[in-house]
Image 1 (spheres, rainbow, N blue to C red):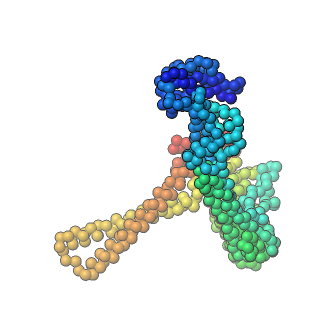
Image 2: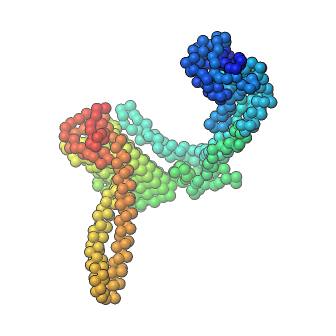
Image 3: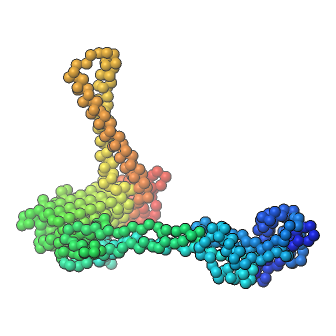
Length: 530
C-alpha cells in the first residue's frame, strides 16, 4: 500500500502525520497533500515542513496545518472522470481520529451526485471497502465503449492486378511470351460478391449517455454489359466466356477477338468492344481499336493501335513516323522505333529510338542494348534507362515530373490565354471610344448602337472565358510545380547533348557520365551517383 496523510486533532489544532508505505508502495507526495489540505480549508502549513514530513513518513511526527474542526474529519473521496467519459477514478483519504468511514451506500450516493450512473465496478468497490487503501487512484466505474463497425467491401473472384510486370530473363531482357495481361472468366462464373457493412454496436459512457460508433459506408457493385446481378443484389455473374477487368471499381466482361494472322487487307481495320489478340503483325496503314486490351504477337508497322486497356507488342513497333500506340493502361513493347507511344500507366521496353513517348507514371528501358536515343520521352514520375543519348549526338529530350497529358493541356491553355487576351485588347478601345462619345452626348445611329451592344456582350463573354482559362492555368501550374521529386535514372551511360527537364527546370548534358541519376534540387537539375 502507498503511504498516506492522516489528520489528527489535538486541542485547538489540526495536525497532519504521514503514514509510511508498505514495501513497494509510494510515499505521500507534497502536491496532492497540499491539495487535500486546501480542500478542507487547512492552510496554516509550511510547504518545506510538509516536504520533510513526507520524506520522513514515520507515522509519528506531526505538523500543524490549521485550527481544530467543529467535528472530526470523515473519510473522504476525490472523483475524476476521463476525457472520453469512459472511466471514473476515485482517490480516498482517511478519517481523522473519531471520524466515520465511508460505506458502499455513501460511495454510490457520491457517484450519483456526480451523475455517474453506469458501469460501477462492484469488485473494485468491494476491494476498497475490505482494505481502505489510500493515496491511490482506483477505477471505480467503466463505460462500455462502442464497438466500431467496418465499411462494406467487394470481394472479387478474378485477377484484378492486370498491371503485373513481365518476367525478366537472366540476361536482363523481358520475357514477352509469358505475360499475365488478361483475366479469363467462364460463362456463369461469379465475378464479385458484396459484403455488407458492419454497423457496429452503440456503447454507454459512465453518465449513461449513448456512445455511437463511427459511420460506415456500404459498398456497391458496379458493372457493365455481359454481367447478371443476383436476386439479392449481392453477387454478379458473367454472361459470357471472355475476360474480366476492373476499371475504377467497375467490373467489365468482354469476349476476346482472336485474329489468327495479320491485320491487313484480309481483315480491314479492327474495331472491337472487348480485347483483341493478333497472332501476326499489324500492317502499315491499318488500325486496331479496342475497348479492352490489345496483344500483338508480331510487329506493328506504320499502323495505329488504340486501347482502353493495356497494349502488348511482343516484337516491337517500326513506326516509320506513322505508327501510334495509344493505351489508357500500360504499354509493354519489345522496342519502339520512329513511332508515337502514349500510356495512361507505365511503359516497359528494350529500346526507344527517334520516337515521341509519354507515360503517366514510369518509363523503364532495360535489356541487352537498351537505350533512349533521339526524340522526346516524357513520364510523370520516373524514366529509368541503361543508356541515354548516343555517340552520334542525336537530339534527345527526357521530361519528368508531370503527367504528359496535363503538360500538353498546360501549353494549350497558355496559348488560348494569349489568343483571348489579344481579342480582348482589340475590342476594349472600340468600346471605350463609343463610351466616351455617349458621355459627350454624341448621337449614335441605331445600327451602330446594336453593333456596340453585340460587341459588349462578346467582350463580357471573352472576359468570362479568360477568367476560367486563368484559373485552369494556375491549377495546372501548381501541379507541374509539385513534380519536383521525379527523377531520371541511368544505369549505364549518358552521352552529351541530352536535355533533361524535371518539372519546370532543365539541364543539357555536356560530358559523358555513368551510373547516375538526375534530380531537382534548389531550383535546378543536379546529377548524383547511383
